[in-house]
Image (tube, rainbow, N blue to C red):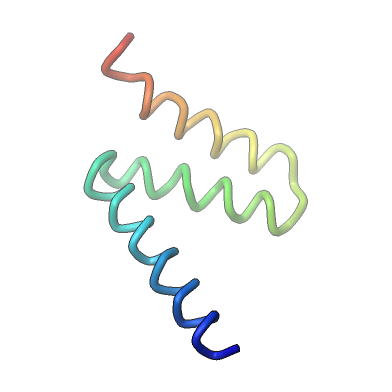
Length: 62
């Protein structure tokens, strides 16, 4: 079980680093809002995070 927890932590940290490298600080803010909203079961917080991430991903296309 500790190996699974360690692997999960490494994957999450790697994904956060990729988002920060690719989309900058606003990408991390969006990811943080989405994560907090999902864990707290807050539709407003998770929606704001999802919109921020969507704007960051679609920004170059707009």
